[in-house]
Image 1 (cartoon, rainbow, N blue to C red):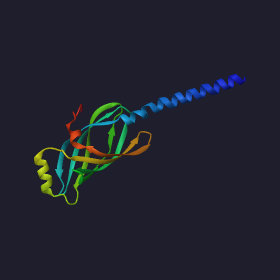
Image 2 (image 1 turned 120 degrees about the vertical axis):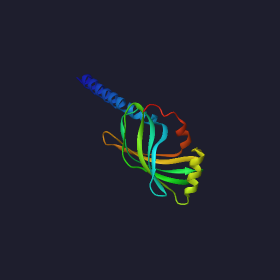
Image 3 (image 1 turned 60 degrees about the vertical axis):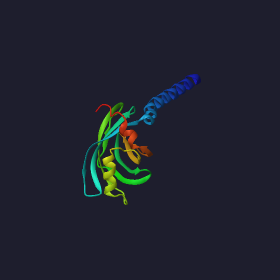
Image 4 (image 1 turned 45 degrees about the vertical axis):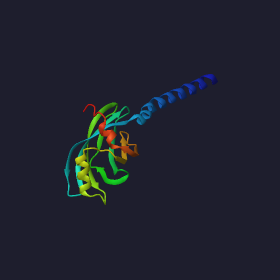
Length: 166
């Protein structure tokens, strides 16, 4: 009887570990989520210092689906604050797929940035020298959430990547 009890406990422990590790396999894939592209779908000026825009954000998500509840950040030009931005809605990211999502947002020029500077950059047509620091609040289907922070993302590099399927 003693060996039967030990065997049962060992089998239960093995089954529990197998369930735990199989459930965690998709959690390990969270590190593999990538932003594959970023583009500007549309924009409209909101006064002299801000605008509303829709970004086309390509995401390669090998993990489970999740919701981006907010995304805030700072755009820097040659290391200096240029503008701040925030999303105006939630984005539902599908699990286990590569897809381009429309992300509505607003942006405001930082103090000290003149409209003439913005216009000369637009005329140049290049995003070279632009980086962003961002903070994204993400929520899984089960309600668990986490704030992800990224610093120094090169905007030119993201915009040069292929936008993939839509």
